[in-house]
Amino acid sequence: MTQAYGEAWYWDKRYAEESTATFDWYQKYESLSPLLHLYIPTTTTNHHRRILVVGCGNSAFSESMSKNGYTDIVNIDISSVVIEAMQKKYSGSPHLKYIEMDVRDMKAFENGSFDAVIDKGTLDSLMCGHNSKPNAAKMLDEIERVLKKGGVYILITYGIPSYRLRLLRESHSWSIKLHLIDKYLPGESSKGETWELTRPVPINSDGNLKEGSPLENMDVHYIYVCTKV
Ligand SMILES: C[S@@+](CC[C@H](N)C(=O)[O-])C[C@H]1O[C@@H](n2cnc3c(N)ncnc32)[C@H](O)[C@@H]1O
Image 1 (cartoon, rainbow, N blue to C red):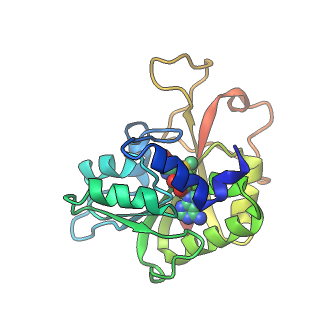
Image 2: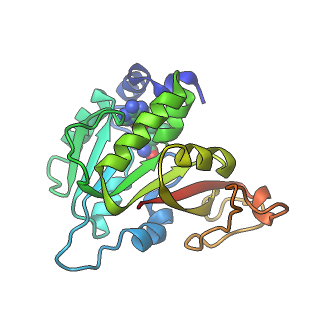
């Protein structure tokens, strides 16, 4: 990824060029939905889940969530261009809110105000930019702050466990579960092994996959489910 992925101007320019497009990085909602329902149930009565999607871009993920039982989804992005387009597109959707905001500074949200935070590709973008370490640390601090106790931060990334687990654990005390999803869509050619999405992957105490594990050779995206303890 390019260094510009951490910069607002890069995303503004890109979204201005594809103003009416829809694009989902890595995975679509439909493939991840069983995992989301496992960690963010929609079935409990009397308690609606408030969900924050950070760095939403022009993805269809939140729209699909809203059609699938989630009724309170707040989406933020640093790009004013994409936020304006999404506000227009979803002006008639009461379950979807779009706000221009930097994930490193979410002071508009109170402490403990969300049940779940979803991040598909946004920490990855910051990790590619300048000052990646301090930016990632600020982002993770803010996410932890806005989550309720027991709330979950669901990070969907290409980042391998030895790097991402270290980063996540550096100054935070999450309880972390790791899941995997094949990079290929059903019908595309995958490289053999598969792993059931809703089954957490066993990891060593140092955060690595067990040595010689067949999972090492799989072409996957990683999903870190971090519960605020
Ligand atoms: C790789 S894209 C992922 C978009 C979307 N989540 C998806 O899955 O398709 C990263 C997104 O993060 C946004 N972004 C980058 N830095 C950000 C920041 N500091 N605060 C909020 N959003 C940011 C970009 O504008 C872009 O929309």
